[in-house]
Image 1 (cartoon, one colour):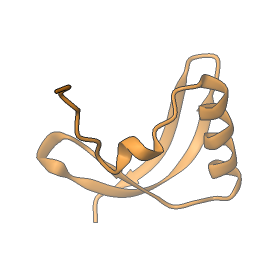
Image 2 (cartoon, rainbow, N blue to C red):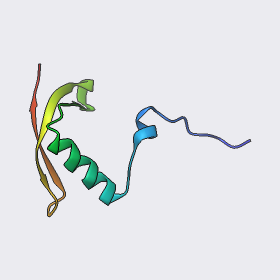
Image 3 (cartoon, rainbow, N blue to C red):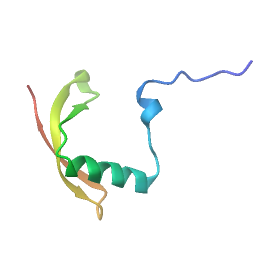
Image 4 (cartoon, rainbow, N blue to C red):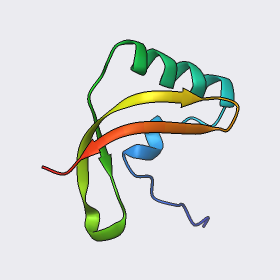
Length: 67
């Protein structure tokens, strides 16, 4: 019997293709979506918005504030 890795809900929506990631981020920023970001440290979460997508440096700037 083969051992199966259990998938989390996030795994169902994971994308790894760089073009798909860029398209998703660009569209999300264009729509001015509010996002919930979770940090591994103490399982903290914040509401945020994307400020800038820097394709040259593969960086994403967000506005994050604890509530």
